[in-house]
Amino acid sequence: MADRREEGPVRTDRPDAVEASGDRGLPTLAEVLESPALAAGAPEILVGGAALSAPVRWVHVSDSPGVARLLEGGELLLTTGSAWPEEPADLRALVAEFVRAGLVGIVIELGAHYRYVPAVVVASAAAAALPLIALHREIKFVSVTEQVHRRIIDDQTAALRARDEVRTLFTSLALRGAPADYVVERLARTLRAPVVLESLAHEVIVVDLADADPAVLDDWQERSRRSRKDGDDGRSIVPVEARGIRWATLVALAGPGHPAGRRAVLEQGATALALGRLADPDGDDWARLGRRRLMDALLGGRYGSAEEVVALLGAAGIDLPGVALFGLAAAEATAADLEAAAIDLGGRAICGTPRSSSERAAGWMPILLAVPATTTFAGAAAERFRARLSRDGSTARLSVGPRVEATSAETAVPRLLDSLAQALDLAEVGELPDGEVHWVVRHPLVRFVSSLRGDHRLLEHGEDLLAPVLAAPPARRRDLLAALSAIVAHPGNRTAAAAAAHVSRSVFYQRLDLAERVLGVDLDDGEVLAALHLALVVHRAHRSPGRPASL
Image (tube, rainbow, N blue to C red; front, top):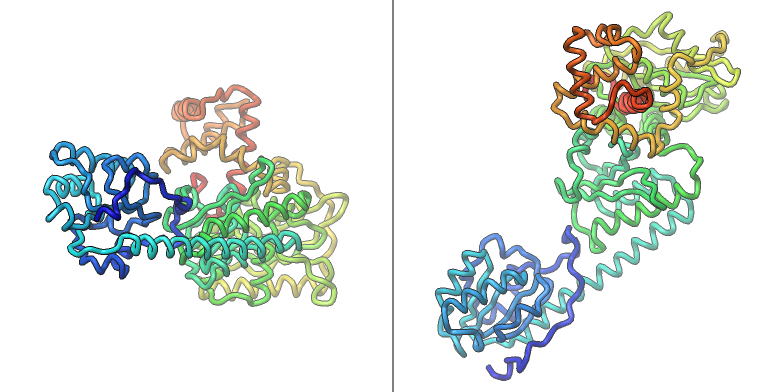
């Protein structure tokens, strides 16, 4: 055995630690024990359990009791124990040093020094959940290190090759100016898992389900707020940012590992998206492009089932229960103005690509409008909606399809598409009279928020300022948001504000005091009220229709 013993501890070269997700497939301790070189030693697991699933990042051979200081964590130690101390207290201290060094296991070959593993070593390893294996036959330790290290290095080589391929792919996409939806599609195809590009308010901008169940998008906004850590539910999360500016977040849901590492692939996609954003800072924001893609897919029949449509609409901020749907067609109106008008109704609008003259009347834009089921969108209300779309001296024209009650996916989806078709058909006739030019002066802040809907600074303002309130329990959150909405609507009249909040003055004052303590602000400060007003409008703009204001 002396030919295997080290005259002095020798430090081995080791690969970098595996990334947290473990995508590169380092062998587990259980797999190492099944390798031919170790299996030849008739291994007996004295201490094992769940710890056998730990990845082995390197194998170290040493009989020295001082080897712990040379370890970096993740190693498997092969030893005969010939130089280990004899006293039980010293052996307990040695095992404790191995635990602190981060060993994943100890393999002791019996025969040359120990006839059996000392009971104190077994007890100490068991107490620390440190795997301990005894070999009953002599083996060549060098054969073990060769086999394990060859696998580790081969895995690293495969990872480097895969990373190079991924880097080449997404660099090419960035140089070609590929749109965000195509980058997300390639990410989903590469990872073989659903990939979501979400805004800073956790709204789905673009999604590729990769043939997964659309239910993964159910209540996405709320679940995404709670799952903020990489690794939650098997997800990988990477920010899309450059030059200190963060625009969005990429989320890959649970899926198979990738040789390059799931997070590394996602980072390459995020880089491609960030470069595209830097190259076209004045382009249409991603959120609007994502909604346009969804609307165009619906109109083109590019969806698998009614349930899939419901899931995609929910991810876009429209939850069918509790809303009424309308198919609209608008001319002389922008998507930003249509979205602002829908928000003013307490709803949401998804705008498609304006139709060309060869397909429909030139310039007519298809819109899916969702409003709370209690909202009456007809007559004067529809006329007011149309009037608010006018800007720059133009006169918006609006065509409204039949109302669709969202009672079930099977009936709502085909009726909604029929409502859209009828609205576009009416627009094609061209008999809609021009309306009177009308600016939306009653809700300038809503228009401002809608026109800057994808601006990261606006979203950060709303999220950061209201974070203490949004983190409160649902009942308290609802009361505080109602009180804040009332006070910004009636800043100089708290009696009117209390009436608007539908509570007594005493209760209203109590809620204002609580809001001041929670937010750490003075609600008598006009600048604070202005900032809160903006934050509340941003919050409402990114909340699904039909959902309580507290959510």
